[in-house]
Image (tube, rainbow, N blue to C red):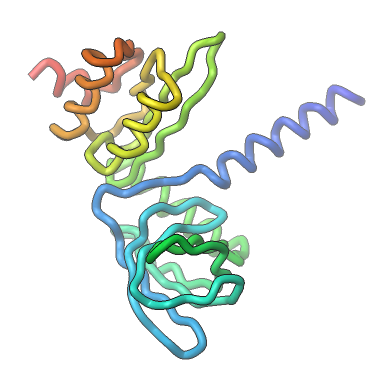
Length: 199
């Protein structure tokens, strides 16, 4: 009985981690927002199933509801109600009030963007005492800040690039910095990473 409870708890923790995994974009999608009759636009910096981070000149009120609609590249229009959770300068953290249909639309849009390399996710994992940076989706300049923070502040031993679906010259430069300046090993490079490194 206890093993079943433990397994259920582990599954719920993993689901929650996936829910809040931030997906970043190299080219920022536009988002249309409105609060108390004031409508404006912004740029979608990152998204998860739980919410998004956007940049806008519109002055939004923290703790209050807003409407937002956006398209993640070729996805259908996603239109939902959310709550402004935080503000730093012109950046706002927004928490979704999504139902199952909206959540499914967001998940499908994220999956497609990662598969086509238009979006990226970077995570740091401990594996037998070694820190492994895992990257999925596009490996490009849009990841530079997170990538360099992980290298310089967190310490990385290896990079798992098996989930990279597209890499450009900026992404290749990041790999060179990791290998040459920080002595990070590359494990499991995807076929597109191997092809660019061999060119």
